[in-house]
Length: 288
Image 1 (cartoon, rainbow, N blue to C red):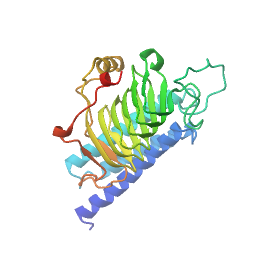
Image 2: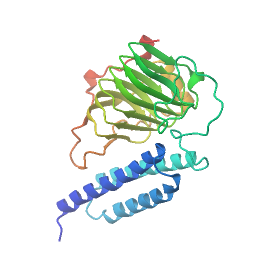
Image 3: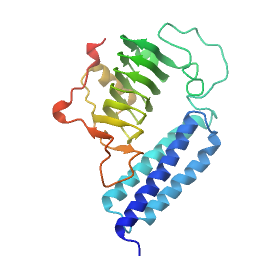
Image 4: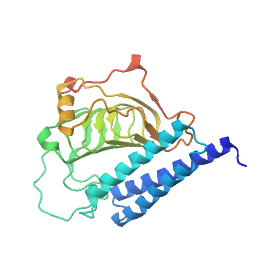
């Protein structure tokens, strides 16, 4: 009979693989790489993953059962929100939209980074360096914000955009509160002060996050990331929290799901908590 240790190891590998497959499918729908018809397949995979967890309760410790159960709840919530947002439109926020008349953008707005990822109504900043940049509450409300190729910039995103997508940043400070999700990719030597329901981080290194997140954060292909809880140290953050109806006491900043680390029993080497004596959350008041 297979030993309990071997059963646990086998479970860890299978569970992480299945969870990553579901997450990758959701990201593919976000990026308009696969059709929204795949929602049915994703739901089936989530149900099978729950069955797999239930069948493993005879040898899994209670802590691991709870942890895996929460991860299934989080991925289910992501599925439900994405399904609700996209299914009626058959389009994702970051996909192409039908061509229509658009008011000519102002200087601080830009054309799409990549039409497969963001659509023409996105707001944000691109190809900037050594600047203090700001979007007002009126400019961001319920919109999708994109930041791309910024170096040594301080970016303040006021209000509550729907999503924030961040790509290719170096030596920046980012202040953002999104009502749904924040996606970070290819960033280094940067500090994020951010709040959202979901946080996904890919291909990033040596970056600190002061975060509020209602589900678990997801990281993939990352190293030297550090996390600490966001503190409401300014009127701007407090107002954004109120607008997003976030509950400061419901912060899952410690739950980091590393898709490159399969073990549920050993901590991932790719991230750590910022020691309390080293926590120095920047304030956007210094960059207004």
